[in-house]
Length: 224
Ligand SMILES: Cc1cc2nc3c(=O)[nH]c(=O)nc-3n(C[C@H](O)[C@H](O)[C@H](O)COP(=O)(O)O)c2cc1C
Image 1 (cartoon, rainbow, N blue to C red):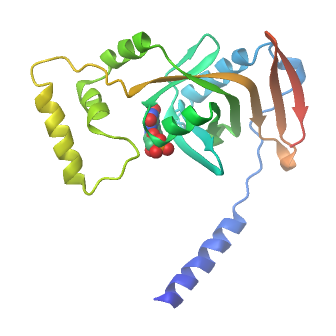
Image 2 (image 1 turned 30 degrees about the vertical axis):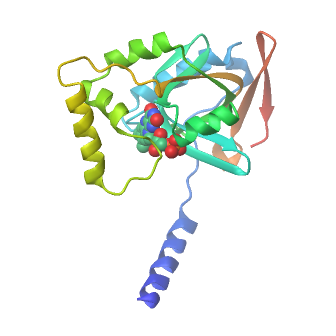
Image 3 (image 1 turned 60 degrees about the vertical axis):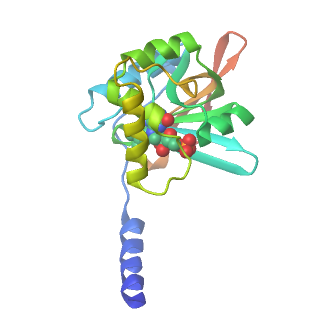
């Protein structure tokens, strides 16, 4: 058994070691940079949305920190509000507790098929209750019930117990609209840095960092 595992491991290491790709799809030059990073974000997001290979262009990795612990997970971008990035979640989840302790966070769009990534550093605030409630009411009923039924990030004994929680919520709202739970809503990430990365040949990639200074944005090329 152990010998089999060691053999598999060696095989995997060989495979990983030999994975190598040259990036040749595009370039990012100062001459083509818009003043605002949101113009470039819009262009790249549109291209990601039109790419057959990228199934969920709005999937982004959210990283949060609390003390010595850093966590990452995928959430879905649901809007660009006044030059900030919006996603929805459970305020009492792990990420919710971390954002309460430290509102600094990072969002990362891993558009590997386009040989691109965008990294956004910013501070998160909660969306207004009114706006969250409006969005919640537009969600499918099953998702609304799910937001009530799941105490996101908490342990649970079994799948059956989760189903039981969902059934209880279903009974509670049997004859009525599902209202938004207080523990669920939007987070708006207000960026202060946005980095655009475009893969280039021979690992000499283009990296352009936009930094917010007052109301405007400064750009700086970074070494790859
Ligand atoms: C494709 C994809 C989309 C997801 N979208 C969301 C989302 O929009 N909001 C959310 O709270 N969790 C979303 N999740 C689940 C999170 O990655 C994560 O498991 C959950 O939010 C609990 O994270 P936490 O325990 O660190 O708080 C998504 C996961 C995947 C794989």
